[in-house]
Image (cartoon, rainbow, N blue to C red; front, side, top):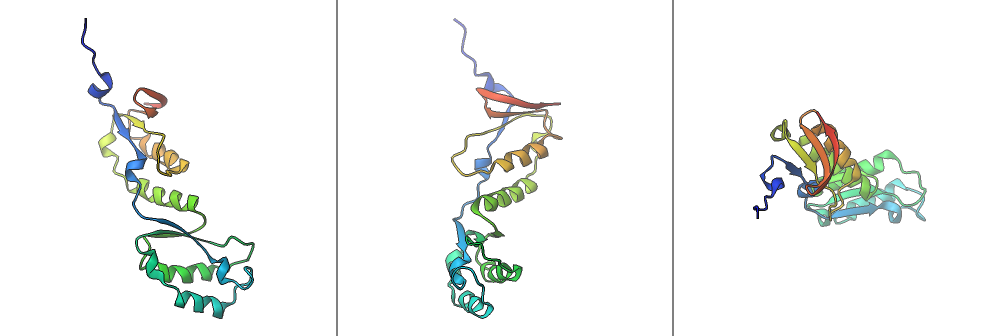
Length: 166
């Protein structure tokens, strides 16, 4: 009988798991509809007063998506004003929903990634994460990896899907 050899463990195959880059911190959807008159009209004086009175320290180390869930027309300065209060506390602030927030977070992470260690290597981009890694992050990662890697696959070493080969 011959010895069972784990060829995956002995290969140069490198795995990138975007879940490993998921930054810690609560994600918060900050809906300003309750700060509007009847949920639709932004009255500057009232809005500024609510912003001034609000306890912004509760957003320490959070990631915040500013939104308005009604069809109100919100002037750009309103979100800018809120960000002046949030910026000393929040790690990241966007205007949009939680999905956009995750996309922005991962865009910045991938932009800063040093991929020199993957040069001319076969790479697997691990799928199936338990954390909310946005699909767009995988597209950005493969776009950044393609000029560097020898080959790129998606999935697990035992059942990967080939995507690119130099």
